[in-house]
Amino acid sequence: MASAFPATLPVRLDPQGRIDVDVACPACGYNLRMQKIERTCPECGQAIDVMQREDADRLDRADPRWAAGVQRGVGLLHAGTWMIPLGVLPGLLVAVAGVWCLTRREPGRPEGWAARGTRLSARWAPLAAAACGIGFVVVLALGGESWSVSSLMRRDATWPDILLCTAGASLAVGLLEAWRVLFKIAARADGPDAARACRDTWKRYLVAVGIIVGGAMLVRASALLDKKAFPMAQIRSQPGWVLAVGVLAVAVVLVWTWWSTVRLTRGLKAVVAPTTV
Image 1 (cartoon, rainbow, N blue to C red):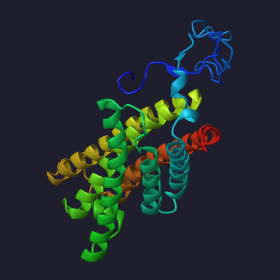
Image 2: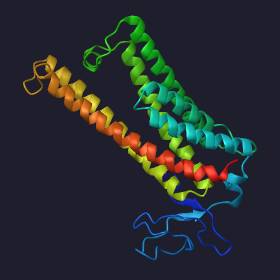
Image 3: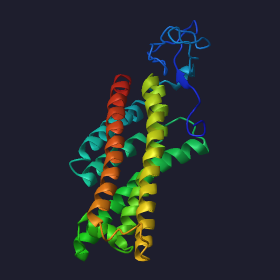
Image 4: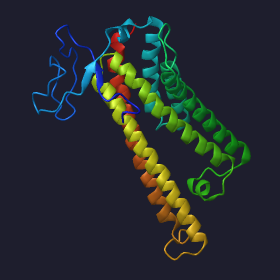
C-alpha cells in the first residue's frame, strides 16, 4: 500500500543510529528497540521495516495548542466509536467532532497539496456523512416512512435511500483518509506500533467496504432476477432467509471494523497523551 502510506515506519533513533522507541517486529513481535535499522530482527531474521524520523518532526515539539487539539480529537474519536452501538448517529457526531479536532492545520508547518487533500477529505467527508444521517432521520420522521429494515431494503430508490447511501460513502472516504492522518500523528508521537495499526486498519476498512458493496450488488442482482422469475433466485418466496443472511453478513463486518477501531483509538490515546500538553 505504498500509495497510501510510507513503505517503512518512521522512528526516532539515538545518536548511535539505534532504534530509540519500542517497536515490535511485524513477523514475530520481538521488541526491536536498540537495534540498528539496517540489520534484521535478531529473533526471526526479518528485515527491520523502519526508517529514521526527522527529529524536528516530533509531536512534542509541535505547537502546544494544536497538539492539545490532537489529544482531544483522539479522545473524542475513541469515545464516539464506543458510543456507536448505543446510538449510531450520536456516536457518529462525537467521532466527527474528534476527526475535526485532529485535522486542524498545524501552525507554522508547510503542507503539500497531497497532505492538504488528505487532511481536508478526512475533515469534511465525515461531516457530510453526519449531515446525511441527520437528513435521513428527518425525512423518515416527517414523511411517515417505515423504519423496518425489510421495508427500507425492498423499496425503489427514494430520498431516505439516497441520503443513507451518501452517508455511507462519505463516512467510508472520511475514515480511510483519517487513518492516513492518524498514521502520521502516531509516528510523530513515537508510536510506530500504533502507526502500523493505522495502516492495517486502513486495509481492513477497504475489505469491509468491498464486502458490503459486493453484498449489496448481489442482493440487488438477485432481486432483479427474481422479478424476471428466474428459478434460482426466488427472493420473494423466501424473504426471511435471504434477509437474515444479508443482515448477518453486514453485522459481522460492521462489528469487526468497529472493534478494530476501538482497539486502535485506545492505543492512539495511550501514545498521544504523554506527548501533549
